[in-house]
Image (cartoon, rainbow over all chains, first blue to last red; front, side, top):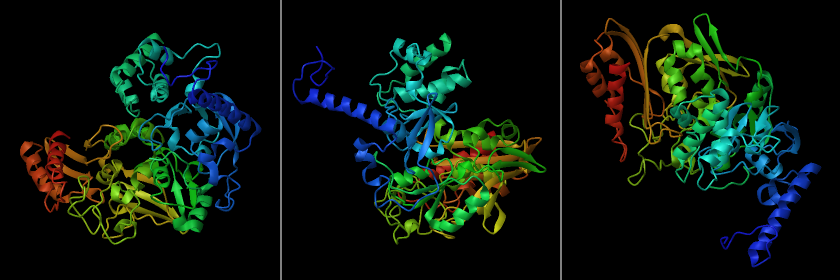
Length: 218
Length: 331
């Protein structure tokens, strides 16, 4: 028996929750469609609303090009980026890569961690325009094309690493960045590498177990 | 804490220092210069400070803004060098381990990966009254909200209060003062070199700035002379949490020890004054003495002379004393 607020595609509509799910699903599809056409995302007006390019409170023309190419997970994506837009915003609301989470939006929690040119970085504290032609990797880019999970992802499942899961993408990205420069870390080295990622469930030891398992398996 | 967009600004991304200096000169106080951006964006997101223009310095390819170089009499570190690069650099670890230790203690791994040495020494204070965007002295008003009978001032200063009681948040600042480093600053008129000790300024000099940098200035490099290369070093940071937190008090010391005797010493503490506090009294007491418990204890007790604690920061007095004692004894 599922909980009362959980709805799945295809379930009969019972109460407002079902329609909520439907509208959310269609909005995501809409966003992806809009991105493909290169226009400003209409349904993100709650974020970008009055700050959009055609707004009167926008200052005079700056020196940067708004339409840029961003290398994300091995793909070059064309995207229209505002000068004041963070990478987390671009990934989540322009490119539909919502695996990257926004926790504090102040570089104080680590949920938004992505890897830029091999280096773990808070995407909430990076202006998208400052990324340039460097390569961004997000949680969505870890899985192999054949559907096989990254060893860290698989170890997270095997060791029951996450509890609620919200900080997990950030934890995984921090761990992947570590293992790529240090394939055989000590538990303390892992602890240090994950020290920039908070977990409100306190599942730190489970995360450490997972990363140690991934390192030993690799 | 809101997760909306920052207020709009124009973004400039100059690729050479000349262009950057032109922009800094043209926009003056309206041009916010960003390197790592790990602190800057927070100010803008919180609306605690507003800016019309952001000048991204990270694309500047010339003027030695990046990298760590050996010079005839020491090393030069480009201001855009990240704290992780400093922490891992062999030359710095070999000669100036003090700076590597300090850089390794800043914030969190991700912040050190992006945050720069230039940004770390230029960052503004953490006083939360000031950072909440209210009109305190430092923000141009006429009140210090941290120095009232009800104020929460556990993190504030012991020394050098002058209307404002904020402290320097930097971990690398005290290390650079102890290493007798100097800062290379450029503006439209040319270049000047300022000793690290004079680079940081207190509220008595200018209450609205933490450093000598004026709006048109860009810090391009930090030079460390070989004077203290390979000396005995001690760095320790005490904070509430091991990650992210700023120092309640930190200590950076460089000692020349010969046959158990302290021939020379430079020692500085952060978190106790608006600037990294160089403790010449401590230096004078221990210079020429044996490196033992007696010297260390005497030095420790001298470190807090002249301290004027606030309501909630008395604990910083024994903390500072103990850190100085440990630095002299264990370096």
